[in-house]
Image (tube, rainbow, N blue to C red; front, side):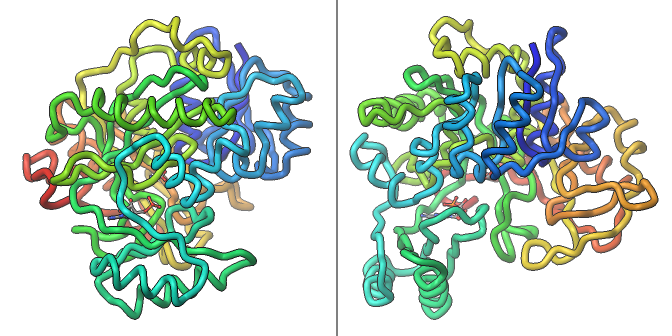
Length: 427
Ligand code: AMP
Ligand code: GLY
């Protein structure tokens, strides 16, 4: 089976590596990156340019296309590929609105009876101020459009909340902001793979959104992740399946916008139960790196079954009892203004430890060296018998890799490994 993977991050590197575990699978990744190029063919493409993605698909003629990032989904790449006769794992443009519009996601949740925080959709600054006063601090202010995880401000500072609301409303035509009740409790990312009717939950993971240790500093795309969650409530996955994933898939189908692909539920485990913070319409990054590290079943069979409406026939997924931890190594200045160009060394030495160094913002420079080309540069991923073991291995890998200006969090999975997460109290 030939699979075309669209994307170029550590997530796509992990997806490609996992697909290639199946002996009958070949992968072309587009545009890929220098790390992915070591394990599969890569091909240049502008992922948001629908015509070039379709042209590439026609050239490669894959049996399955897997879309990694959100931008091509929201641009309607899946619709065009499907019209051209390809089998695609990823939602249509309309279904991807679950991620692309916070207001749409809220509407679906309300209709499906899915637990989430109260919120107000505001198109003027007066409405936004009133909503901020209604919910009180901490203030949660979200850009209504796509913002790569960076459009959300959570703050105790009223002036900062108002300033972000103004930036969202004035940012573009039809700009709007969603002001939301603060959800207090540890966050969990749970992925559901769906064929539009059936949805199969994967194993839960926790992401670390803030740039600094102890959740200091601004939000990022994600600085690290781990799985499983030893502190998760009993029947957690079953509860989310029944109260979130299946009702959303059913509601989307009822509206004739079936969701085929990966439904990513960002959840808060609060004192009042599990609530949805947000949906994404794609695999999470860096959560995918740890989730796939624990998947023992065939990923290609899972994604193909979803893309062809056959999930109900698939045997139950098998998961390793090991733990997995990934640590993101970021460029100088990330997330505000990442600096490119620093040469990276030590990756082979890290890989000698038996772990995976997934590439994200990397490129080959004019001397053929691997250099920094984006904010999140590498995702160093290790497994171990428990979280203590997995995190010590991941950090041993991180210690071997160097580039100027590099920074990473030193507390990924730390509290979970030492049993210090209390439900509904702290993250
Ligand atoms: P989002 O893009 O909606 O996932 O938001 C990014 C991050 O902001 C989340 O992962 C949370 O850490 C935080 N966040 C968003 N909404 C809320 C909320 N209602 N309550 C608490 N934290 C939130
Ligand atoms: N790590 C969160 C995301 O992929 O949006």
